[in-house]
Length: 359
Image (cartoon, rainbow, N blue to C red):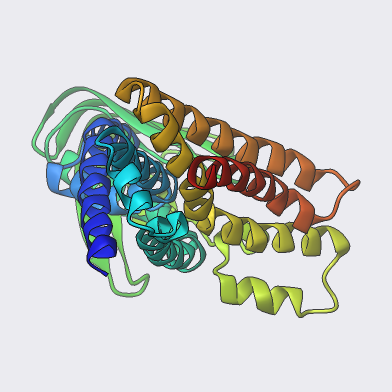
């Protein structure tokens, strides 16, 4: 029991350091991507978006951190000759893997919940979070000056101060294909809440306006237009036809429906089993990481970590690219497409672990 706790403690420390190291590399990239996606918003809004962006990244980065932690822990046992002492004490080599199996099981359960219960909703929420921040940025920008873009429309001006624009050109392009162009000497912008529409609206009052467009005419010298922000910045509806936007419960309900087409059934079944296979990545990396650490770490530490990273990259490339390619083919079942890479690497990892621990 003392030996198991010792290995568990070392593994927890190694995984913690690996996770922190990977986070230092990945977080700046995710942060830059968030800033690029959200545009000119506050830093608080960017950090609010980060959890939504990380949900899709963590299921791939945490297994890599676990793999590096396993290599470091069991590699150190081999490098310090502790593995030889353990064998001489008559302790079965398989017992050394019990702490890692425990950690892998906990991570696998959490990851399955993440990819099957959290990530589908976060994909939807991230899009509408971007939309909400765009609305807030637009509200602030109307009071600051400069050119405005909203939807497919735009408003440019020669000069601007506060919410007043001079030398205005407004291009309105509606989804039906209609286009209206308004030029004016001056425009005053304001955002108000409309109780009938139950939405904020952009009100533009013109002075010296000229309206051009199909069927458009100049009503008077001081026309105005009212544009609901809900139409300028539309909510992104949930894509009910794509399996990746459904949680596991919804996928199972979909598969229980006898009226769905074979193509839809194939897509949803593949997605459900792909998530299961992704959760079992920790056990694949456990079987690969132990022999990698024991065999390579005894000679060179850099070689062990390089080999581990190589295994991880190859596995994810095969699982993601080959699995998806097979899923799109009608020649194999979706279960085979989802599980084939995992089963192959489990067999490879089992052989390597047996050779490292039992020979």
